[in-house]
Image (tube, rainbow, N blue to C red; front, side):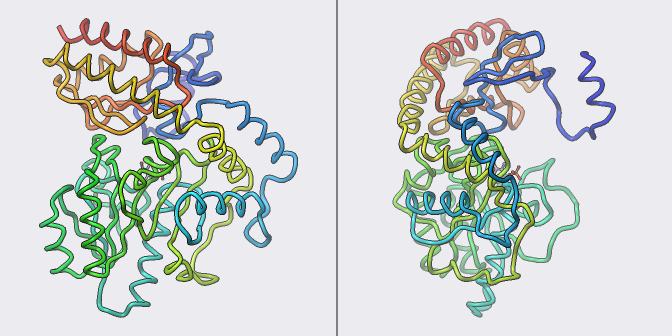
Length: 400
Ligand SMILES: *Cc1c(COP(=O)(O)O)cnc(C)c1O
């Protein structure tokens, strides 16, 4: 164990199983350790570094905004925050933005917004429907909406009703809407830590229709799927649906903390002064970086580039599965959010992850036996080939 790992364990509370890697710096699709060894990064800081590490344009914005101001609070007009909101709304739907510092805080904001909506409606509706295995954050309100063993424990939670239904079960959803009269439905278009389970467009569209029928707010948690991760700015854009509320975070700040909600015009006046707020959000620096990230995706062609690269990656993985049907059960996901469902026990999958790391390749594991790939949009053909060759090699070694 390196000196740094030891020092880490002595002073930091142990809430994350860490990989044995002490990061020195990042560049593009690579992280480098203290010895200068490079690691191809298909985790991207848990779906954050969508344009890779230290992108020159991101670093340039960091310098420019850093020299102006870092924090001013919400007492004054924050130009980067306005610019980013204009840009996000222009690429989605007419409405307004509320900013937060993180994903969980975006979920908290939605819980409060739904509460305000419930009061304004005065129809006796109350509560939120979520999907089983969903992840919406770890703060106490968000935790109540998160349906994963190991995350959702017996911490104290707020007093509002939550119902969960199986993904893709429209009957269960309609029964719940009819029977319990909830105020909102919240779903991830691709369940991320639930195992990279993409929802079928047809299901999302029918769920939205049911929401209209029962006068229920349709909210999309795009904290992981948003900001180009699935090949569109937001994953709901693969369907014909326009949600009432979209949650975003992770990729937006170019690596700095930033999150928030996009709220359709008809609900965008629900928050009044004093209803919600935070000292930091939006950090002018994070917001300026967010604007640069959207420009890179939409104006500089990174969305398109990422789509092409992800097709190559999916195709390579499908071939690998065809060659190794005994080890790989299925490949699922959209764009740069991929789950390789392994037909191996958790120990072997962990060993694959570990061996890949030793040979310069970073991948995530979720739900014990699913290898989760979250590459940056800038990944090159050569890097994809490096991964595919190495993955096959390690698979063949470890699986026997
Ligand atoms: C990561 C994540 C969250 C929580 O975001 P934090 O910034 O970690 O609080 C919520 N929902 C989804 C879908 C996520 O992937």
